[in-house]
View 1 (cartoon, one colour):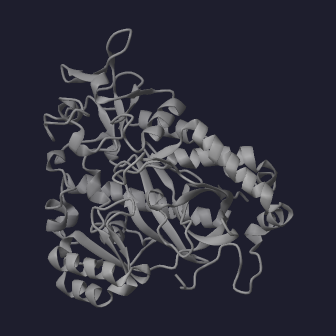
View 2 (cartoon, rainbow, N blue to C red; view 1 turned 90 degrees about the horizontal axis):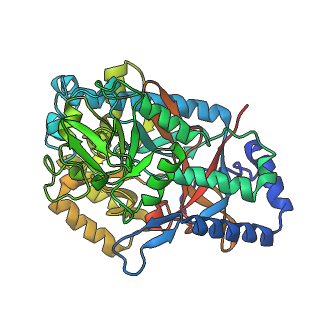
View 3 (cartoon, rainbow, N blue to C red; view 1 turned 45 degrees about the vertical axis):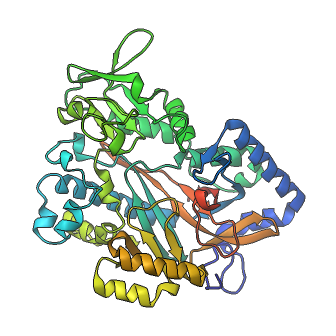
Length: 472
């Protein structure tokens, strides 16, 4: 990519931005050999802890280490306050939308969002209609992917409100920074992220099911050790001090969920589930599923257990629904959106499809239900052959795709093979919603390690950075 981008370290005339002054001075005083050594130490730490990410379908051992860049990404206190307000606003609107489309459907009746886009969407779970959830909170944990393109220009790329992952890497990255670059950390006042697990547990305990009469028992439900995010499941359960369970560890009796323990059955009240909707309950969804708990949905409907995130939240992070989030903010909150969406063309509309086909080499094309950087075309860096493959796909199944302009993502100083160089980054902040809403001060910064690449996903060779939100 030779497109001009916002450099978070240097300004337009090549001067170090004040925010990065301490880091620039530290880099100048630190030998490259020492930086390389710190990087190797980070890799050894992460490997010893077993912090891996599974990549399937490529043959061989799928377990990979996500590269960690020892140079942090900095966010000014004032910038963070703005982002925090915008993130809270967005997640409140998404929760209101979910409550509405599964109950009164006012936004559909008002024709503010196309009815068929919601009700005929595979992510819409009709079995959740008229199901009440505690505090009307559907997405207890949200990961909102954001990019920066200018000094005060931030965009939301997509909303992850089903089972967002990556928070364990945010926490482990901070641990690595404290261990490897304490002298640099000492030069900044950095907002802490270490209390995330405590905040997550408090959030989950604040939304017990209606029939819970005691302090709620919380568990983390995982598909098991073969899942790509299993490290995170076990990490969060351990950090919260709750049980990590699989479907076989739970059972339903008299409309109540119990966990098998060495002391006998124990009632479970709140399940932080990291299993997709389709596998949760074989009596309601996929009958062949061995991952879920038979009878779970009936307990859920009757107010005897709460699930985080709620079943059916996927309709709110669908890439076709994404274009309507500003409308949701106006409709439910009566407010002007603080965070901007990326302009998006819906390929299901013939006029917008025509535009996309005519400008394919300039655009990013994504699958509506895609994730992890798969099934995606970055036009400016794609070969002519790949563009033609996507042109054919678009003509055959236009409703499967959306397209967006190729944004010049901001870049941060990154330790790469040739030394310190700018690499493009995004940011996934995490928002917790329960009895109250809380935004963790930081998030997961993902970095595209290949020169010019805009694809930051770990599954596509991206790495991560510690994100330092500075305090006044």
